[in-house]
Length: 150
Image (cartoon, rainbow, N blue to C red):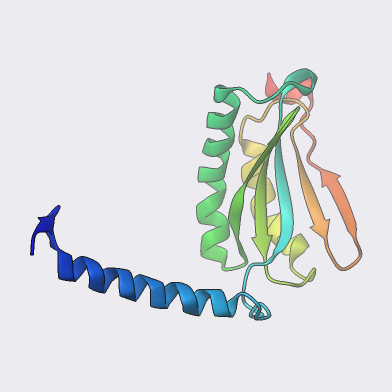
């Protein structure tokens, strides 16, 4: 029996079997309802604006990532949510904040993250969007003006 990258063939076969067992368990759980402590609802969108509805540049992406690096430890330590990812589109990059399946903490998450967003040098048009899933509503605030970036 040979080795590949220091792993024997039998170790490789065993690892594949463990992975397949894990994958089947995860696949079986896909139909389960989310746990009440899972971060499944969008709570906030931190929108990084780009001028004239242009597609984000590499610099925009780097800056939005830096904003996320500032926000991540704040939301993570609170236990109220997490950064779930980014969405790119013409005129914006959205940093997506997810939390538990309730609207009762949206304002608390906003109050927690808004000061860091305000201190960050976001371009004009950037904003925070609070997402209220139960009432199917969004509230935009903290809109950055031209004067705020100079």
